[in-house]
Amino acid sequence: MSDNWIVANLENAFSTWNDKMGEIWTLVTTSPQDFKGGAVWSVVQNINGGLQAIGLGLLVLFFAMSIFKSTASFRDFQRPEYALRHFIRFIATKVAITSAMDLMVSVYTICGGVVENIAGSLGGVGAASVSLPGAIESAVEDAGFWASIPLWLVTILGSLFITVMSFIMIMSVYGRFFRLYMYTALAPVPIAAFGGEATAEMGKHFLKSYVGVCLEGAVIVLACIVFSAFSSSSTPSIDTSITTVTMIWKYLGEVIFNMLVLVGLIKGSDRIIKEMLGT
Image (cartoon, rainbow, N blue to C red; front, side):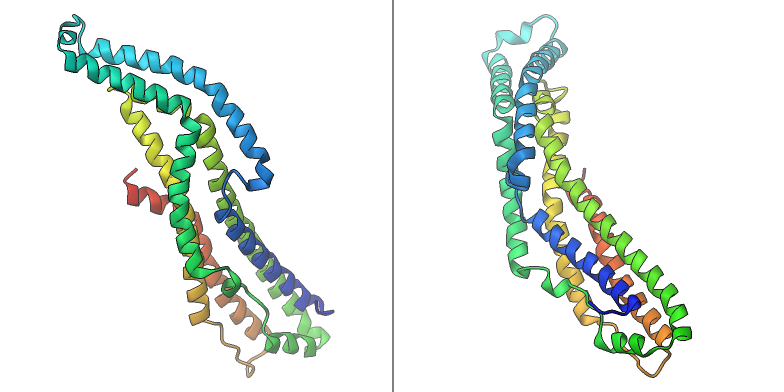
């Protein structure tokens, strides 16, 4: 770390960005069961188990609603295939409710395989890390006191913007991770909607939404790959013939633009998946 305050400020901002990038990579490649040693997952399992009784109660309600909506005279139940269809629906939904945890884990495992395959093609986020070029560091350290005054303002604004973007980015990824926990914990309730023909659409929408949340990890990994390729192909140029303030302002502008591309992709990952799945 440089002794120069301006250089140290920029290096701290870039370090924050690189740390959050590494944290994002850890989140998208870690299963919910292993996150924080499994402490959160244990709570989710307890909630899921406690809601199974409510789910079974809703199953009976939705099943009864479906039957009475289909026929009030029960004349259709004289046909064995009609009664068998309702019976199979009831039994299948009951099994799904009691096995909701295993069902959600299976869906996540399938979607997680997609994320792991994409992540394996990148290998890490080392190529997406940002560092301060030596030419800028030397120019700042050689600047006099009066020339350093506008540099302070430029670096403070740039560092603040980079730090804010870092936290916006990581909060978006954490939001996706905790939505996985919410869906898994509450799963028995919406799954119970499959017990009735009239309410089955609710259960389908829940499963599609959960698959979408799982696949958001793939979009986030792809966003990191795009950012890595975009940054490497558009490395900010350093023009030492201009003033130090202009040089830093130009460099930070290009770096922040590249970062905005990644933040925008991560923030819009849920919208991209919804458009793909039609939810």
